[in-house]
Length: 640
Image (tube, rainbow, N blue to C red; front, side, top):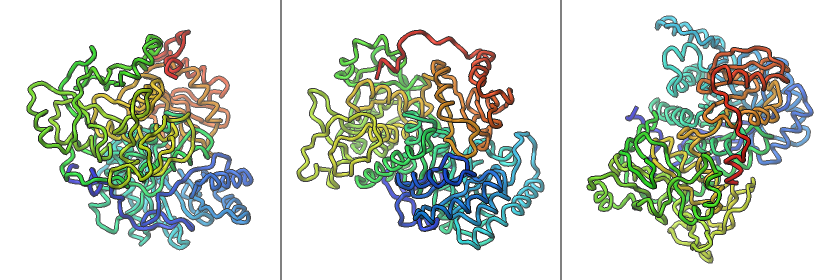
């Protein structure tokens, strides 16, 4: 895959050029800004609730709203929802979300501005049966799909409405799984099968998505999709919708979304985004806007960078090979854990409670780690390090005029792979009692200097909030959301590139918050598992139980199970494959009933919801992964 290219230059921001696709009165791609989407959570048959939630999202700044249409009856009610919205002066475009039922898609397409279909379950059955397909059988399957899909394409073309061909990692067809496996390549080929049918019918109002709950899979799939579209020709320049599916709630969900979405936006990939949270939908909008604003700041701060070949395969994750070294009595590099580094001043602030911090402890102090700071463009300095007989611990020096991701990619490209790398979330330090505060590179003016009239001082971040993000020349105190998204995008993106043997979050003054953020980024990137991991879908009209309260109950019962991964899904619409790397699944099977999974296999059926959490605990016990919670202060409380 190395000959394929996923962006114009992986070291300099260039937004991918696409055709414009109109969704109602909103343009996606082309010269349009990156658009923000979300989805209502109520029953589609509840017309008034659907109208109310849609208007709440529009008021929050959502530009496109998606509504589930699981049945023909639901799809038919979209007429009344859209009519009610327009009568009340709300012109936000409506997208019908379709799974399984082509008949529902045909009905929905009469009333909405866009239809979303999932290739894995629109015309395919998924039995997860291993079978060999001959070329003739494979071609026959594609002909069957063409017969089922063509009527919808023709109707969308006739009405002039858009379509999202949205692949989910968890719902690839048996045919795709057999030929390509449960891989990013399989996700891409699944979408392209449907795209070819649309193009044969001269329909080009298509938008693609490649969603997964694992950011590494999601990033690789989108990169590969762009590379394949580029390879197919300039008229395959369709816009992309970005999202990490089943991200969950709270900080963890925001971090995971920033790693997946932020990484791609930083590469110029993406024309519309949705941040999927297991929370009330309006909470998604400020996070999405902040991610877009962060990329806007980065794109205004680009510097010329040498055009060199990447040190990693962008389509297949491999950790950068290094030799092991020891710092502060801990090994790092090679196959060792990715370590968490702190400044000495922050270490001193929390020394009194380190014994209560559990897995959130600081591991290495920066000042005693013999870290070599370097500008990755300095060829002489790089050559000197590479000439050393023993492996060196290397990082990018602060206050240089390079974006973080580009700087560390360039360092990894030029540095011999035996040298471990320390990643930073930003190339400046935040306020401490004795330190001068310097602005980030992204907050400087285009010439790299402080803006006229700027003091050069950035105040410590405030509490957790969902406020807007400062502009590129604004030195107001950033919210913790901005700090979190910046750190997650920069460090998380590099970790998913396979770069990094230790990390340092220096964009957050509070040492406890910085430590928590460091470990949560490692967890979300799948780089170091130290607590229970949850895959939780956002609520929608298909959901068969209250996802927010249920997720809270499950977390209360299982959050002490270090390394156990639990999927919490309101229904099985995105496919049991979405839980393929989860140990256990808690899935809505029918109203008031829950099915329990081990991996992607259902093992307990129709459990009354009131009993389901206890039965989940029993299932975890049966598989030897249950331990009793310790009656003591949690590590999270210690670092708060």
